[in-house]
Length: 264
Image 1 (cartoon, helix red, strand yellow):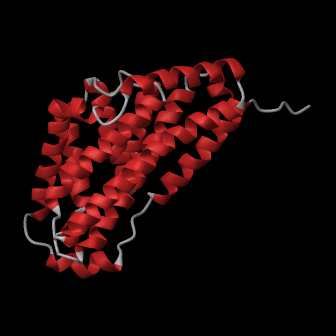
Image 2 (image 1 turned 180 degrees about the vertical axis):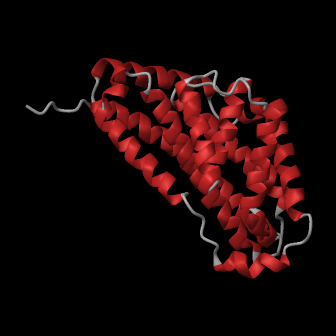
Image 3 (image 1 turned 120 degrees about the vertical axis):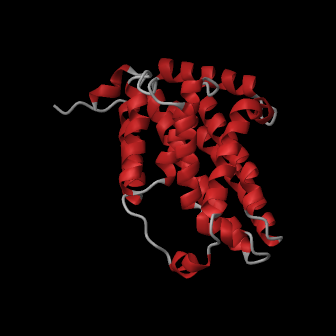
């Protein structure tokens, strides 16, 4: 007799399929026609400037920005909501309560993606590229922080900061770089001491370097008035990818708290 799967087991199978689809999309990056066209037009040292901008944005958020970002949403209310949903999941053990939590976690990412896209397009109209990085980074971290709260996790310890940066790497990298970042993300899910030997400053620099490389052509394009609208629109693409990956990994982290996790 075939034993029927429990609601949490069904949700975990769905998660594995979604995760696999995401990883498959990042096995190899396609060199677009736009990138090939812009290749010889990128100013020298633009990537270095981008890298410094992202690095400074990360440090600013970690040092001063968390409390400012928290003023844009009701943290205590979100923490209470998690406790209610978690209690329902543990007691009811039905798929409806699990779906509700999953959908609410995804909704935070959609709002921040739309807001970031609007800001990026607006700055592209007037030819602002690199200066929008603090805005893009602020919306990005706001989305990740809200997703963390939806699944009952903090984000202000040094180790959590490292993991969040690795989430960004895992969502934007391709090929071997993506595989390595994804393995480190999952290693932390298995053992929270897995990142103890990693320097936060080093991970900041690695993440800034990766983003500067991935967004190089887009930020150059965004710096051209009117035409930059197209570059600003790509903020939406990257925000969507990062928030989707973060939601998958926080959901996976939460599901690991269920005794049935290893019984698929």
